[in-house]
Amino acid sequence: MLRRHQSGLAVYAVTLIVTFLWTLYEVGFDKWQWVPRGALLVAFGLILCIPVFARETR
Image (cartoon, rainbow, N blue to C red; front, side, top):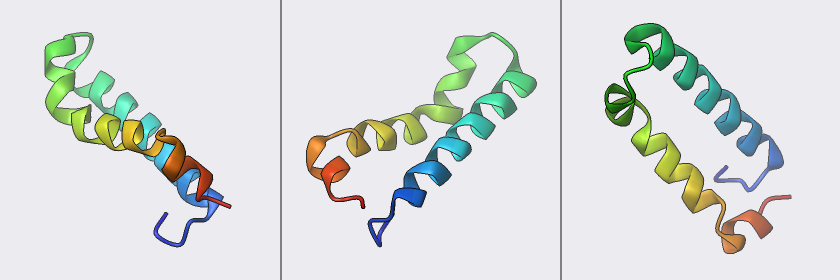
């Protein structure tokens, strides 16, 4: 992602999916337990959705 390649977004998406599955396996459907496990990744994804960052990837 620092090199502004599109593959960085794919790696982020895979990381987010794996983290979600791990969280679901570890704590089940207790959503309050999801917050410490995924909040940072979700916040990072929201930053990546800002058009300035989204346009800079090739």
